[in-house]
Amino acid sequence: MSRHRHWHDHRRAAKKRARAIQYTRGRPKRVQLYRELLGITRTTLGYLRQAAERLTPAADLDVIVWQEQLRHYRPLIEQIIAQTERRGLAGEVVPAAEMVSLFEPHADIIVKGGRDVHYGHKLNLTTGRSGMVLDLIVEAGNPADSERLLPMLQRHIDRYREPPRQAAADGGYASRANLIQAKTWGVKDMAFHKKCGIKIEDMVKSRWVYRKLRNFRAGIEAGVSCLKRAFGLDRCTWRGLDHFKTYVWSSVVAYNLALFARLKSN
Image (tube, rainbow, N blue to C red):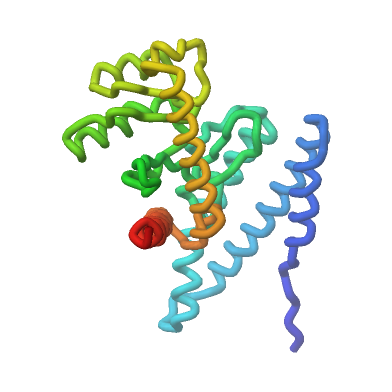
């Protein structure tokens, strides 16, 4: 007897509609494409249900592994369907904290100004005069930079038992409240790349110091670029949040060791 296949491969159709959603303008057209994509997804999910019903519990290792994967991914797929209905069909604003990746559920949406949207985790790092990374935090969600300056500064004070005499930060960290608190904690000169309405004289003791600290911050940007290009921080290839953090720290340690070797040779 011949066996009839009761399923079809919808990957091509799904990719076609996903690309169309990305490049289509006008909500009515996108809504229709979302409906079609959701229909394909539900059909595929139905294939999984049919396969699960036909497979009886067995000692076969492949079957056990497949059933375990189904138990893991099925609720995630259903969650993605629900989120897509809310955002794509109902026009609801879905919080950034909700799931954005089927295979990496821990990933966050990262939006920096008007630039492209990225998925992963925001990193906040502190470097010293030598350029070596002294501290790093893998943030949860997409917190504003202005909210993270004081926690990073507090960590530095707790770890080294004193505040830095001088500090420089990107313009996103700038606020008068941050400046006042940094000065209260003992930072003599606190330079922000963008003034954001703050006078240079309020930040540092002279314009010469401000230029020096801005140049130092530019050096930090060069270090971050090196971490991305030469040490793999542009894209993590390890699965899971714990492995993500391990990947980040291993890249930073490798960067610090290479920098230390160069400093030692000089």
